[in-house]
Length: 599
Picture 1 (tube, one colour):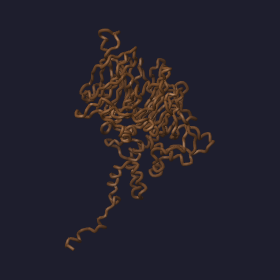
Picture 2: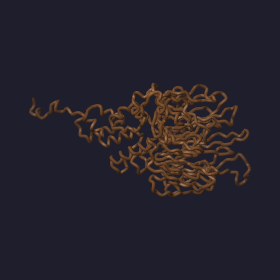
Picture 3: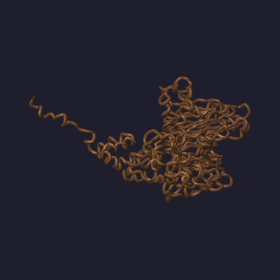
Picture 4: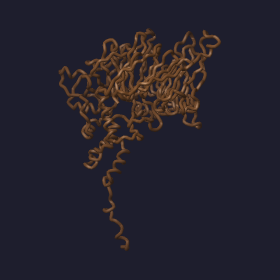
């Protein structure tokens, strides 16, 4: 044995376990785990259970449960953050508003460009005036209307609040000066990039106005626009074709900061209309002609080839031979963004977990004036995940073979029938707000759907194993009555089954009110006001007009809650903090905005 051997620690002395580390280091390590794994750590031993009960880790777990992202730039303490988070979730869960107020809208001659995004409410009147205001986050906050006048006709607007950006699309027929009655015509299209705060040109936009001329002659120009990261996707199409005039739909992708045109392509008329971002470099484009959801990739540098076809596609349920898709309106908010959001709030919604809504209208050939409507929901995370699940369908060079709906849709979608109403409701994050179709005339409660799968598991856990209930098939959006929503049992398990463990291990509040009942109890078959119940049955879609070739199944679970009060609104809007109820005047102009704030 050498002289220094006594200085070498034995194997026993060198053995250090993870749990021997200081609590501060262990906490940092746990914060790198998925929040569900942190909850699992509570079952290891008392040390980890005690550690997980700390305010910082409780805040991290509740963030994950709510589908929120922490804002590292907010200066408030973790106890304050946790308190705000729990209060916010409770208010949304119970539709318990911390304040509500009505804001008058004095503008007349409005059109249908009424938007809510990130607390910014906007309306266009006289086709050339863009009015907007920052909605209140407190009961005493003053309202200030701002406006911008455009010389050309406004055809679409959008707000990207994470960039303090308002984008306004205007158009002017190139024949106006020479022959105003000449149709069709090419249009000069302008994309105006304004700063929401000031109303002036956006400081990050190299060109305050991006101008171009349409590729084809058009009669009635329509547009949609969506922004994520540095890119803006603009879709143009013909609204009212006449005779044999059928110009192609046109898609443009611009870098809004530099003004660079990154992509441009077209498709036969009746293909495209609305789009949504999956990631900051992949957008989804529904194709009405093919009945497919196309995935397009935006090149991120000049070395990448510019695509002229989608690289992946999902097939919608096939229609019967005498039916066609009239429109497919889609949204998923908030949009993906690069880096932390510019906000003073301690947390914000994670775009990855937002639910995408697809409002599908179908035109029967034998009755073109009757348009059956449906809506289906699917998480953005699922739409992204299909690229891995069905990687064999990815085709970077040739047009892809679409994944059949029967393979991708039934387990991850929820289809519902839309009532005969001008408003189908709106979604934000994982929530969807709607009312019955006769709400404006008779008044009805607000009905809130929540597609957060952790919340589904929590409500199931609060309901107990003995819950027995009837299954309501064919729930109709716009006609959700007290006796039309039921829980279901004996069906497939909710997608995330951590609810019971979460309820036990992290002090989950028992406010979900999914109460066990006995068969025959009349109160059990009703959705009580301010209570959450779960819909998780695998039901066939109610299709009275026989639009689809096959029975459409879907089973994405969700919870439903109704407000205690009844309201008479023409339409509803939703964002991260609030619900807006819209009241109209005799000429269908919005005359009042009722703000219900949850935080």
